[in-house]
Image (tube, rainbow, N blue to C red; front, side):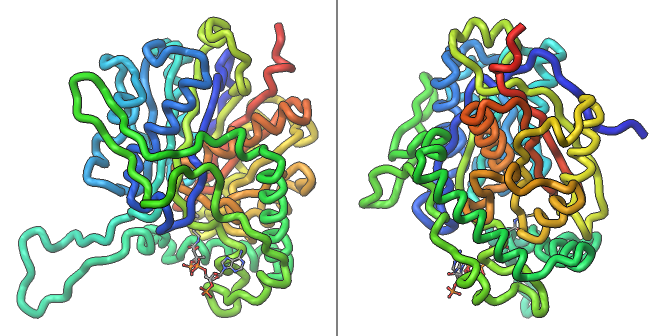
Length: 416
Ligand SMILES: CC(C)(COP(=O)(O)OP(=O)(O)OC[C@H]1O[C@@H](n2cnc3c(N)ncnc32)[C@H](O)[C@@H]1OP(=O)(O)O)[C@@H](O)C(=O)NCCC(=O)NCCS
């Protein structure tokens, strides 16, 4: 079987932007993911220097059906971001890899000549995952059980292996001999690094602050993004807080005898991120320096019960396809779904922690599923430039048993 990994040529991440990541059931809980996506998309287009009319298509991901307009979310993000009415939209999902998948598919559309520039968006309201039932459409029989369930809670279970996502990390902890102390120490470092990045303004460089606003489109009804009374603007991620290992050590494990807690697992947050992807011609026409060159993409399957190890084969086959080794990679992002899961990947890849998740990760910042891959890519692209380094690999594990990875290159190293 050929490996699902390809190098890419002359494909550029022109610009990107995201909302702040805001804690579950917080100030964004009443906001539709469509509006979060439109906000991020408009900011990314503005930063790209391209007119929205130059973008030929949109690729949009959102996992939760978090509003009644969920079917048209991909189309409406493109429409209200200002793309031409003739520019088509598609919704994609690779669960926690969706934020990479939108970039991969945007690049494919460009490589195949469908468009010169494509809008890639991931948006997620974890707060608005529905409480739902599948069996009540034809009514309730007297005395029959009422079956409303919390979609978010249920969706974090994999019925094939009968494990929750947290249990997949517990499986890796056992397999790789990872102890609670190591997981808490890793999580404490994630919080430290995120707080440092926040204090330096590095996270602010990614963020387009969210204010209450209306999104218009001539000939169509306005949309409104409303914030709670007394909240004027949201400019900063809300989850990072001082979290020393000694404090994290006091938290209860999700499963008895396990290593994962609420403090060393990805936090639940709401947010959206977007990027404009273009070919070399569009990049040069934009008149602005691009964020990064998108150099390659890969995806791989792993057993569902250890889904968190997915980044390992994804990264290995990406490097093989590109003819690079780990020694060539200055920065690695592995999404922090769970602390033990990242540590297992780091162990398998013999990764140096000084180049892994250098500005913190989803344990500290949170993980709005479909948006995370775009944030990781944006973080790594900006950090490559700050450090004047060449390559970064960004990756995530994917529930159900997959991993996905992208290779990006600092544009300063790509001059012809
Ligand atoms: C781990 C998880 C189950 C915890 O959910 P939860 O119990 O609702 O978590 P909470 O935010 O209520 O936190 C539980 C407690 O830990 C505390 N806590 C959490 N993070 C903390 C930190 N950094 N420092 C100190 N205390 C912390 C909370 O204050 C809370 O304390 P309380 O019980 O006294 O109120 C949930 O976050 C989760 O499932 N995360 C993983 C998501 C996931 O799998 N994503 C997909 C990946 S594949």
